[in-house]
Length: 214
Image (cartoon, rainbow, N blue to C red; front, side):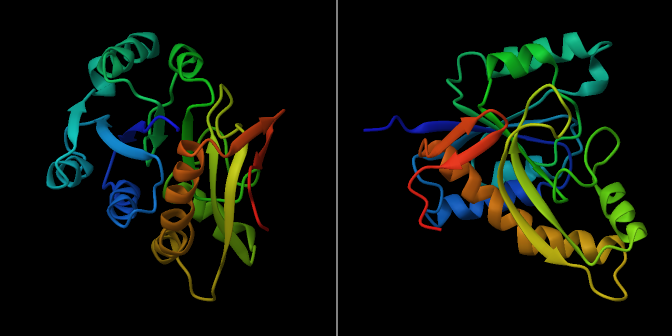
C-alpha cells in the first residue's frame, strides 16, 4: 500500500493551474495524492482566494521580503517544515528555487512550462514572454511540458508534453489561453498523479512511465 502523498502547490498569480489541480482532485483524477498546502510568493495572488475557497491551508512567503535568494529559500523550507510534504508543484510560480530547496526535495518538485521544452525555455522565458517568442518564430505548433525541477532552469527530466496548434490570427493572449486549456490543465494533473502513484522512473535526464500502455 502506497503512502498517500501530501502535495504543496506554489503559486504567484491567478492560479489557473492550481484550479485545474483542485478540479482534477475533486474528480478523483489525482491518485494517491492530495493538495494540503498552497504557498504564494505575493499577497496579491488571486490563487490565494482559490485555495481559501477549496479550504486548503495557505501561506504567503513574499519574495520581496527577503534580501537574498538564500534567505528566501530558508523561509520556504521553514514554511514546509512539519507539513510532511511529499511533492511540490510549481504552478505559475515566478520565483526561482535555490539549491537548498531543490536538494531537500530532489525529484519531488515538478513544474509546468508553456512550451515544448527544449524550445522557448530557460532563464527569461516565462508567462506571455514564451508565447511572444513562439509567435515571433513563425512556428505552427507549440504546447506545454510538465517536468521535474533541477538546478538548471527548465532543465529537469520531462514527464509529459502535449502539442497545441498555432492558428492564424493568434496573439499572446489567445495562444496563452489555448495552451493552458488544451495542454497545461490536462498534463499537469496527470503528471502529479503519476508521481504520487510512484509510476515515474528517472533514468539520467529522461523519465519512464511504469505501466504505460502506449
